[in-house]
Image 1 (tube, helix red, strand yellow):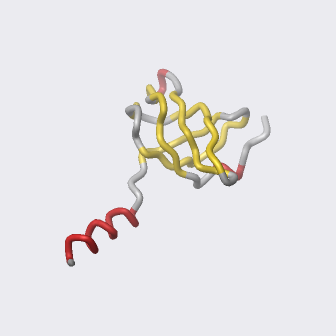
Image 2 (cartoon, helix red, strand yellow):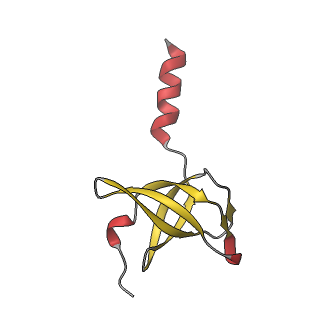
Length: 83
């Protein structure tokens, strides 16, 4: 199956939570100037609404994800409280 290399490194939000080894969820990924939905697999279950980072492509609109916290958001929060 052809992998979609462009999706690796993109971030998104889980529309349907993953179940770890028990099955995939669904993620909305910001890519190619818009957003697209993919089946999302993760090593451990992740809840609906979790921000994620795509770490791999399984082809046919399936990706591997991990939970993701944008480090720039943390910096923005510190800047707001320092004022």
